[in-house]
View (cartoon, one colour):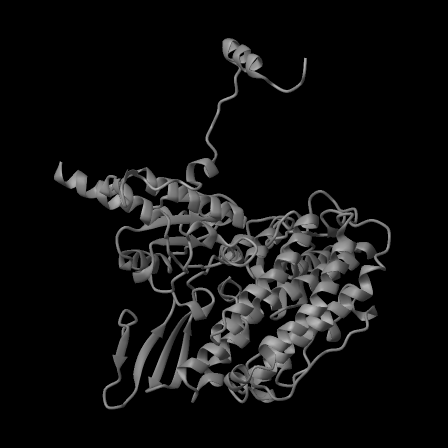
Length: 204
Length: 375
């Protein structure tokens, strides 16, 4: 019998409960997701049927403009991610903006210290809704290597602003950052923005 | 007079006003905050406000052992993590009287020079970006990624290498290290000529830098500038020449100095340094001696009571590490003399009387790394 697992083997595994858990990869989830809607062919064109929210989320997730917010080492890996070798604009994180008013997602690349925390809060407040936050690296996630024995480091950027996606690493590789942004895309495509959830909670 | 929260404040009775640049600003390369006093477009005064990335590394090091504290210094000047670790490891070795094997010395120097090229590469991309050109940034990162790959093969990390330990280096070089370094140098020799063709000879770029941001030799000395910033003003201050460490006294290399002292001289300095680093690498790469890469040391390091100081030449200048020991396993006090801090102090002097746009270009030629300044 060949080594290649065939249908019988898989079925046998299923009987014994030993079948490995099949998880969708991020590429499958975030890859070329088709436009959310169906086209009904009519002579000379077609009619598109879709839900408005789906279309808006689809559009939002594929054009995320990051704010160039780098405080320390992770900023260099962020630069690597948008330079030629890794080139995150392949996935729609095209235009890094220097002004928070033009940005959709803030990538906290580096340590946040007590003096910087109010500035970060202000930048976040200046961004237009809907806005997303990626905490890049150990420092922005939890304080990282500066968790113990320091007097000035904020132990995680989520003490200051809400965070959508955390990336591990010190500093994370560019692949990890791109993975995080693709995870954010999945999150956006999945449904409501944080603001929509907030508004809904207000009304109910 | 003015509040920091206000974006623009006029000073009563004059035409001058006060504006804030940073802490979130693309040209400050991090989170530096500059308070400018300007009259129209002319900069009258620059006040750098630092501390937006003060992570209290010096205080933190007091509670870490002599093996541990080296790792936190990778995050200080992250563009040259290897040279930071080098200075710290040398200081501990000096205190303990550890003899570093020759092979480790060769590896350290090779890595130092590779780091220097990588750091200057990034600087070259960002100075061009500060002057309005975007393409050089991508070209510089293309070469930088090659060095990152070499580092990753041997050290296991792309950026924060943590390769130096007291007594030598943490692991032996990767079997393909020599070949990939030689490939890189051959590749980079042609690319640095491309850098010259693309940016150095560009008339717009030259007119942005020539005669701008002059720093005289006397001022460079009195502000305590080191590294390419000071050498562009004619100060001979290369630590590798004046206080040779490891095997630098056996290597044939020139200390490059310019006399113009303007932004363009600082630009040419760093390009020439990249070429000189390649010469050093080529001299060493085939002659790495066999032997140990790590000296035998005690499991717990205890420095004798006293004060120890060591310095290395990082891509930005002279980094000094000063350890006060009380004889225990952790340092009593650590002070880092970072090159960026002294170089930044000259910014006000260099920028006065120039336009705001020139401020960005001058700051670019200083090659500031803000966590190195704030620590």
